Image (cartoon, rainbow, N blue to C red; front, side, top):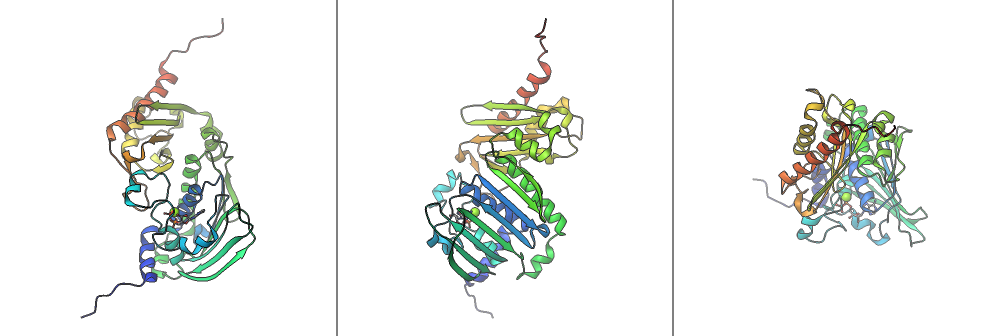
Length: 339
Ligand code: ADP
Ligand code: MG
């Protein structure tokens, strides 16, 4: 019989990476969320070959203290929560402290980071979980994270990836949603050397929609707003002319986090009921703000799914907000203002 033994850290990280790093897009997501948590106002994401060969995320956030750069790559190393109780009130996007360790376990990683008050920053290289270089360097404020050769040391995982164009499409899709989630951040997204979009970061959701989806979308939206004691719902919804053939254009963000929710899709679609044809779906970009304790984001590491404490209240906020906006635009008779 084989003896039972505890796995070494390197093996544990590699296995755990399977949970966090499913594909290139998961790496982009984790890195960008770290940049946002670091209060960056400008974030550049560059990918090559669907993110399999290269992912570079550059931010102007607070940076990582020089003496903590190595620690940041340890599993369960996080500056965002200190106890399980904090989990009920998470407002940062990250909190598991698994991303950097996981990414570094299955790729070649280079990190450059500098805090504003420091004169120099730090550069570190990690390959397949093993640190190969760490030095003080001159670099701009903020953090640049470069990942190369995803899954170079896990061929089975690499083989499981889709084509680079399909992996790239997933990242683009994510980047669009991200820019809609954060109109206060200026994003630049570059794919194989070509700039796909930039946003201004001027806080205007409508401008972000313009930069991402174009004029037709920006022009055909309606303001949506609802507020109760426990929840605030705001954003833009499409006029019925913008209806699409799938649900990919229904965007929901809870406290700044993009989520998927059948409950919210149902609320929007119910409100549009008579205004869209069967098989067509509305355009919506809705931000919901509620007490973090009313929503459980701790359901899965990729955190796309959430569980609501009071689903009825959430449904109502979205349904009422959307219905009201549509009523204002379409059912209230136009009053002539000119003689
Ligand atoms: P988590 O985000 O769950 O805390 P990560 O493994 O993603 O875990 O990151 C570990 C820690 O490294 C973070 O808690 C944060 O302190 C630091 N960190 C990571 N990326 C950045 C960044 N871009 N800017 C500043 N600090 C960062
Ligand atoms: Mg993180």
